Amino acid sequence: MKFVDFIEVKALRADLQATGKQEVIEELVHALCEAGAVKEANQASIIEAVMVREELGSTGIGRGVAVPHTKHPSVDRLIGTVGISRKGLDFNSLDGEQVNIFFLLVSPQDRPGDHLRALENISRQLRNDTFCRFLRQVNTAEDIRQLLDEADNDKLNHL
Image (cartoon, rainbow, N blue to C red):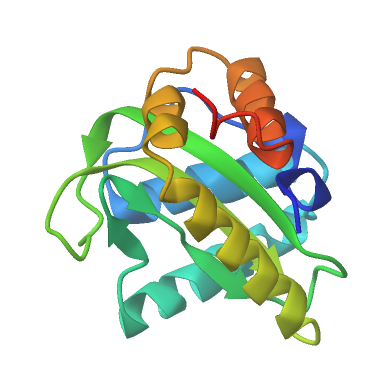
């Protein structure tokens, strides 16, 4: 599975304003709503579902990265977005470090395979130091889109 298969380009955010865990999740879900990927009526329950998942254990996986995710009945396909926090914020990350790269995923309840494939793709790309370094340096949503496209086309492993 590639980023192009599930990332909502109109929901990419290169300069998140959130200062805490709940705020960043709200900002990213709102971005999906503004992009038309989720209905406004479902926004609050998606945020709640992501927060319930966070209570099970932080999705702050370390190295400045978090992958908050949930399954939700309001979506009929896997959707996601990426957000970058310039300052970084406390996300109760496994390594205790601030997080500045966020991948938010919302998937249908009946498609666990897509959910797992997306998480696998994200974690594989995040092991690439070049990918993470470039993500931290983006200035615009278009920069993020371009970087995701390069990752999809395996162009970052040669830098």
